[in-house]
Length: 160
Image (cartoon, rainbow, N blue to C red):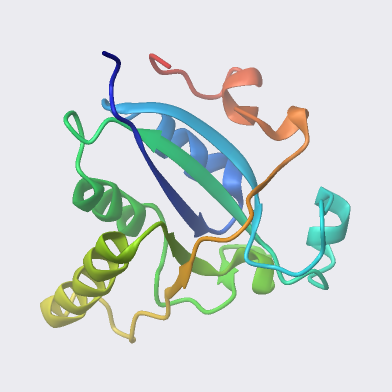
């Protein structure tokens, strides 16, 4: 019998760097970049970039929960970006670059909310965490040239 995999979906600004961060974690089996959380059917990159579709640039992560926990993915997610920055990461500005956790089930929702609460209590950040916790909806894969973009450019490399 094969591995029982789970899915997690995160948005933390431009999806290229975020994908690479997750792709290189042991226990992550597959990553895909795409768009979620909006209203337009089958949005394109150009449409999402306008900010008019409601979608976020996101990364869908398939992982083996026996090799890496959802909690560890959350920890990595928060280390990859500034969760106190509303609708902006670095030079990328707009709702499509929001910080969001798109949960797949009640357990993920609970863990995400608990992780945010615990992180806020640490006093690590000077401002409140503004990461949205939203139910996962339809995930629209981005155009092929965006998939594993940094690896294709020779900028990053890892085992998967």
